[in-house]
Image 1: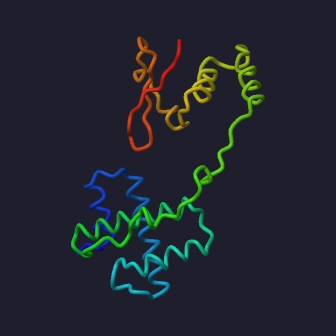
Image 2: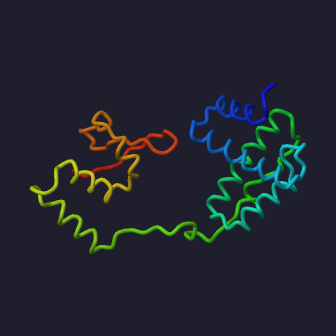
Image 3: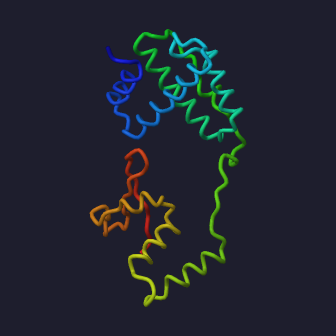
Length: 184
């Protein structure tokens, strides 16, 4: 007989979730189940409002980052959806709008960026053709002026570029494609 976790993993696969997403959700649900076993709080039921709230409080007490807690809440919400789909639960126990930890806009993570002086120094350095290859100069320009992630940049292929419209395509997180504009 298939365990609940294995059935959840299979359900995620059938729903078309990305392999890393499946791995993350399953890991978070396993962590929740370990917490239940340690606290001996309603192990017979896979998910209850009481156990969820206790788990969230536990994460807060352990000083987990807000983003990490919210990721785990999201994973348990998907698990809740699975349990409802399979008939184990009759209602939603987790409501993301209410259960995620809300923070002030812009305070989720501190993003550091280069100062204008640092950008000038970098551009001055890459303009020295005898020291920096054309490829590396292009990498710096794309990162500075298009807003692409490093992972998106390294996945760009020559066939992704439309040289007539100067709009190369990048693959975002989750496999979505988008164009980035370049001025000739």
